[in-house]
Image (cartoon, rainbow, N blue to C red; front, side, top):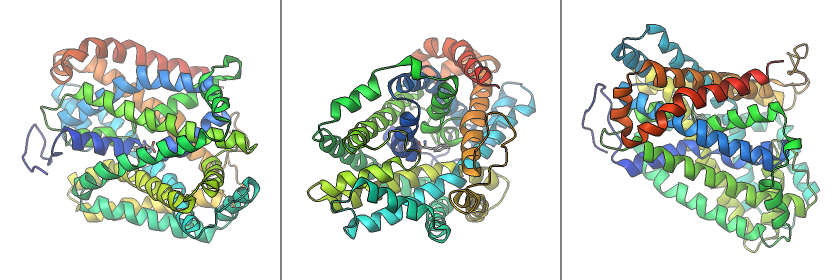
Length: 455
Ligand code: PFF
């Protein structure tokens, strides 16, 4: 990795465009694609939801990703630091730094529950290689999953290991180690997903799944589903939470931002759709409910692997890769905070340990909400929040409130507060498309979706 110093900041940089793409894809591709996308699609009725999600990626996510990478590169600091630098460059009020602060907080909160879910992959790796999935029936697979969720001690163990892994890489600097890992692991995950889709096509329910995913039935679409699709577009692309800004800070000047963002968004979307195509045929073949919820892949995939030749091996490999995909995402979540604390003079190691420990503590409340505190639904008296556990609330607060808010503010800043000559210098020929999108389409779309949901 080149250690040359460039631009207004003082950060070392990615070696080249490919490495940046892989790191950004490493951040983007994670539990959001393989765990969350299929289950929220199942809960929200399929096709119409998928269409809205794709539209959100193209018309809101993509211009926003370009903006974030651009702001990160111009500021060349942590998201908080970069917002301060760029606001000063543009002679704008200091309070724009608040955007960086909310984004960093959102990433922190996401990390706290993401680590709990990512932890689930580890017992699944063990079960896979011990042959527990061989010929497993769907009902037994469900029981296996329920047993895991019912055990706070076990969840705590895996949550702690996963957070430890995240802190470990983060402490040493994200670019160190991450470069080599992502360039191999992401392609492997992709190949394995294609194998799974191949298997799913033999279940006899492939076309039913394709119909479910791609035939829009707008009568099944609610205003809340649209907000969920929007929030998920941000979540899956690691937007509105500092990660892309933080990684953009290490991007060499000569790399074209717009084309690079298109590649990242396309790869992320492909992985999500492949995950859907792998999972729903199995759901239908075994009479499982698409609206199963957060356990969807953990219940369905073991059934598929259990019937495949070499299933133990493929299952083990799949959950290992899922673990790595989650890991390369969680590292990027911690980066905003660690980068900021480091700028304040704290060593990376101390910042990573402190930030990780705090997220780990909050994560414990998530894991308890899956069992001992499953009846603790503190906002029952508020319309729209009835029956939501702490985990549900963290998810809702980040994806449906904080991220749309940060996205809106970034769109306003990049589109209206930054001199178009400056953004044009960063985005080249794409600027003509980007500017109207970020000025009008993205903020209006976010506002409309948001206000339709105010109860
Ligand atoms: N994009 C990640 C996923 O889809 O799993 C989640 C994520 C990573 C969200 C980084 C936010 C973030 F800052």
